[in-house]
Image (cartoon, rainbow, N blue to C red; front, side, top):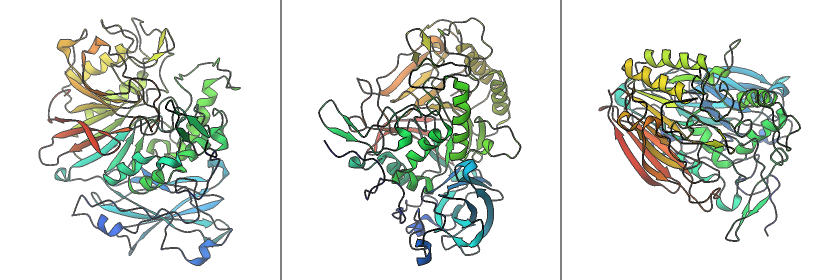
Length: 543
């Protein structure tokens, strides 16, 4: 049996090192962008090539966890970093990689209260441009003592329709005990996604598995050994704030993740494993692994760690109420409606109640979603859901975790809220809606149509599923006929919890043509293969 990996080593997928490897540049897709991507070949997470010898001295802040950007629009975005000690975050942005005429942004003080993480909001950015940025960490007591700069780049959303939009989505990262395996190159799908050069990445939840222990090694059914990089925080289920923080740090040990974050902005939502499997507000656990039984206490700690480690605009509003659900407007072609199907839901149950105003979104979030959908002028309106609509996801033997419960008749339980939303979309004639999700650890395409449904007061629409990105694969879930789903495509393993060495990882791609407005969905498997493709036409109610 191979020697267990218990921490950073010389292998490239291990923890942060003083001199991270350069990030290969992806080919340019918009020739009109200032500061072309072709000129970014020397981009490095740790600023390789920019560092002076003095940076190697001890006692200077280090940003070895890389940088990341989030919720980028035509004029704004967030830049994130983590230090290894107290520091001032100093951010520079430029139209060129050389940082000539750089604009300087004074960031926050990074301290123990936020686990030395910090986020700086950028405003007044030029639309449809490549933005290069550089983060420097300075000693708060001596600003002249600075660490090695860390660089990154992203594209702002276009204001011209003809520029088009292309993004990727997936979820489910470091789940079911399948962590960073140095023998296969770590989280390889991130490198593949980076090379596709998307405008952004939609993380559809389960960005961590706080309830998923990472063992040093796992023996596969065929006798092969899966090896994991491990950390103390991943040796048990997360309960304390520091343990939740450690779960986010774990993913950042992977060099593919850090390289991806430095080039591709993200839109991140959460689901259950950021806290604990199948959780809901008010739940009291009977799981012997937990000494803290009150899920509300765990969720509060998890939410704080989530806000510290992900650049989410609605969690970084001074004096504002932190929330995950939001709209990210990405130019005239696209609005992304990020849903939170976890924080406001009612308890998991047989889900057959005839009256349900709370449902899976909560009454307040449902009202918000209706208002925002009705007000949207975007050609396409992506509903980023952390759980599927018509796939039956059980919780134990009698309860249900998602929306469907397997009864193909009239809407019951949480289905009532979805029926209300679908009816609203039809009667308000809201065009271009599209549902994207992950959660179930396989990839599929479902078409929903009233002529096949028990509930018929809605317009046809599509739902696409893609994942996991770095977790176990599972067989396909049963369909619930209430909204008339037809499984047009599915690729799923036949047994539960196949490792990434046994089953490919999955992510999806959405490409909106700027001239025709056509939207193409591609379901991709790790390795570059497109498994399924569907072209949708703009201007239709539902879809």
